[in-house]
Length: 583
Image (cartoon, rainbow, N blue to C red; front, side, top):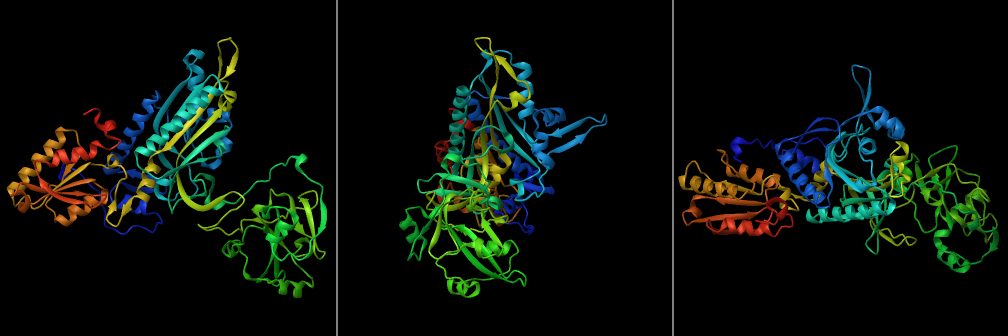
């Protein structure tokens, strides 16, 4: 490609304030342009990157015998009525009505459509298992489109669906896809983690998410000492808990116990032989409120209170009361506080919701209520908030967690089971001629958000550097300095350019009448991995200069050696066979 025949769309304009580096870089490097909130144009450079990523994904999907097809974007609304997900998705589901007053949905996902196809086309168990995939545009009416293409209204996904005669077959394919996704992300050289996840509106019992670690991610992951990321919640809901039903057999009989000379929760736990996480502690705060100047905060004893979080729930906190201040104000002689005796407003942290057989102070000196349970001995406070302090060094002794990291979700896989088959009457006859529901798996990779997530973690002050060079829009850039002044520069630049083209290497030559600084800036900005600089001084000695974008490494070498030099570099790349076969 010649730059005079190409449009970079690079921009030096100041980008509207956005906390993501990837958004700024995708605009500046000419990858995307914003059309409207959550809607983006993918420019030629961006499309080249998308096509490279598609090629890698297709290679691996084809290797596991998944079959590519294209499912329609427009879905008859009756399919979504049948599955019941029209209510689950709510306002995020984009709906349209045609001239005949027929209702349609713009697909955010394709479980209904693929199930419809299978129920009408697959009639024999001999056709199973079968695995279809597509790379398709999806739509979701995000209430707050943000983070650039990471959370957009229109986005590109690779989604695939497998169908099986039984659960064992589903699990087998699920594990194959899990390993395949790991291969894809390993080939891309990205720092990712796998998290066991909730199935949410997709349905089913088992699912896993793949995340890129990023300080600007919208998710929070809790990292355990054994390097497994075992908790994942959206940052705004990280500590939210739902009350679950506790097995009645686990509920112990409450008893009251006198325990003297315990000035810390550690000592109390040791004396009564319980874990600190099974004790509830109370903290009294003074606030700016004439009618209710004090509030009791109750939380698990192994956690701390976050002042910032308290302020975020519109409480004007003045200070946390000391033990002496509590004794003076409330006229009680305390070691620890019984919040329900104080007759002041109580705010409970989410950590207390599912506690059972816990320990809490009573209003009697040195007395503790052991094996206390909500709804039996005490009423759970009405006001439950996220007030727990967390930072990157927080240690959760109860779950062996050592660090909280932000992340961007890039893929999600599900063992859906028979949910859609049951709802949409997708049956098949097995070997014994018994009518059975078909089992289903669903596997997605967010292609557009994956590109943004990669850029978010792989850039420097000059622009993007791709973790795998085969993602770049061009593998090689040739920059001839003053080629319109020096014929020898132009001649050798185009000789090299044509040789690279014959080898099938994506190459761009900067033949613009521009200042060399602008040429270098553009190539560095979009992240061309291998840059060849040809100037009059070096070429007179039959030499050129090579520069590696990622490392900044430079080398002067003979023009006769440069093609082999670069070819050897790209040949050791894991993705070489994806793009070049067995060359």
